[in-house]
Image (tube, rainbow, N blue to C red; front, side):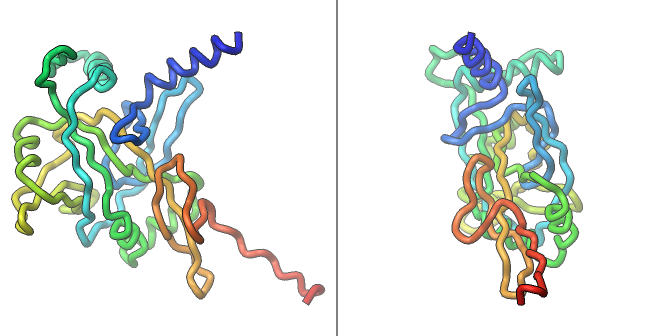
Length: 241
C-alpha cells in the first residue's frame, strides 16, 4: 500500500512540475510575470498557484539568461493541457520522431546582484517592507514560455537580453546586439508553460538593519552569512547586565 501511495504521489506531482535547464519549474494556470513577487502555494491535490503581490520598480535593466529549447514529450503534454483548459485548438504540432521540433524559450534572471540592488533601492522601500511583513514570499526567477514566431525571430537576432520596467507595473525584455538595442518584446504575448521560484535571503548591515542579501532557488539553502528568515533581536535582560 505504501509503495502505491508513493507511486501515485510521483504521478500527481510529476504532472505539475517540469525539469528545464536542470531546474525544477512549476506548472500552473496562475498568471505569472518574470521578476514579480508573490506567494506560491501547492494544494493537497499538488496543484500549484502563485498570487502576485508586487512588481518592483526597475530603474536599471537586469541581465537575463535566455535559451531556445526544443519541445519534448513533457513540454508538449504541458502545452496540450493548457490548450485543453482554454478549449482551444493546438497551434503547435509535435511529433517525437521528426528531427525538426517546435521550440520554446526559457528566461531567467542572470544578474541576481543587479536585481537585488534594485530591490534594496529607496524606490522599492515599500516592496521590501512588504517582504519583511510577509512570510514565504517568492520571486518569479524564471519562465518557460511559447512566443509568437515574430518575437522568436527577434530573440534569435540578439546576443544580450535585459528585463526592463518600461511602464508602471509593466515588464518587458529589451534585446541587444553588439551593445545596441534592437527591439523590445512583450512577454504577455506569449503562453507561459511553467515558472521557477526564487526565495529571498536576508542579511544585516553594521546598524543591524536587515536587507535582501541574495536570491536563490526555492529548494536551495541560503549561502554565506545570509539567512532565510529575519532574526528578531533578542530582548536584553537588564538583570544579567
